[in-house]
Image 1 (cartoon, rainbow, N blue to C red):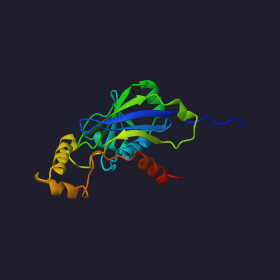
Image 2 (cartoon, rainbow, N blue to C red):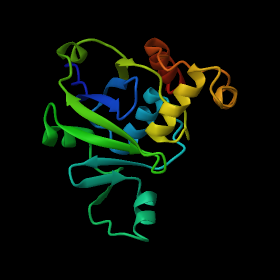
Image 3 (cartoon, one colour):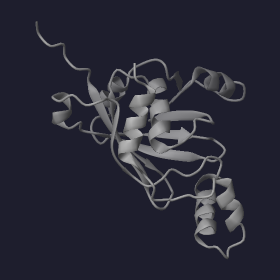
Image 4 (cartoon, rainbow, N blue to C red):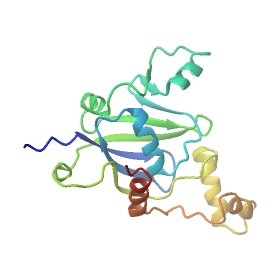
Length: 199
């Protein structure tokens, strides 16, 4: 009996804009996923807590949760908005092509913007058994939630790096006592995702 074909895979490199050090991740996910399915995975690999609204900006189109679209419709035209539960990632990737880009916006108040670039999926990933989705590379820790966007994060890093700076102790206490801006554990991230979503 022939082996059924594996689902199409898509690869993205995601970079958080306007922060130093650069925070980035490379992920391989099922092409059959919708943007609604991609969102919680991006939250996980980045380190966000999914506590705020989000949008995907693909050219002139904005892809977002239906509830968010309904909220936006109270005060603005939403003709360019699309429901994130409709359509697959592979369709968008085919339209954009390799090196094509779109944006992932998170937390309107803090204004986090992630640049996402479509990459070529390594051929080996279609031939070997590895857990999908997977984060295959990345660097540096995600900023804390509600830190105040890129400017607030820059101020936060200044405070925790300098014991003599006003706010040093308060900032450390707020973030739980320790924060390593270079902290990123790829193996733990993948292991815990699949442990949490097993079955």
